[in-house]
Image (cartoon, rainbow, N blue to C red; front, side, top):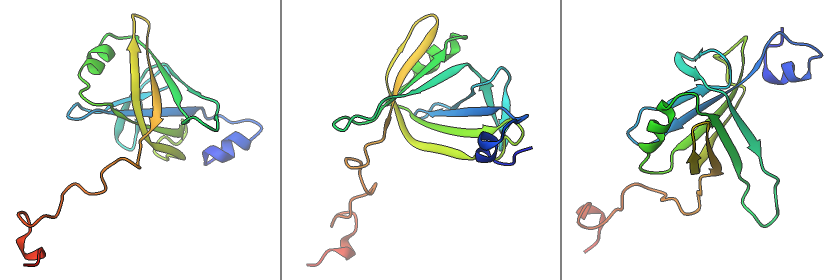
Length: 154
């Protein structure tokens, strides 16, 4: 049986399923963890709820920022209540694991932000975009004379 995701992809047959884990984190709300499977999954001691979802990669255009679309089947109205609790755009972590070794994360993307969220009775959709590191603050605190008088001359 393949030990890693790459070995499973390159194997002619495998008994393991490729699973995608999503962790959606929004401010003070508890993280929402879902797995693209028919049954819940425990990975590294964290329980991922079974929710069918799809991730579609957009084409890379030279003059546009790459985006990814996310669609989650709205099998429970709890998901809409969770989304209504967002104050800021939530961050999304995408992880790939094998069903035979769910504690081993073979691939992870943890720099995405969920935006443009829409929902109806059947699905929740949104756009995953990279976090804009160029406009993010580098430090949380500003060193000023009032906060740190011994750092300022004179």
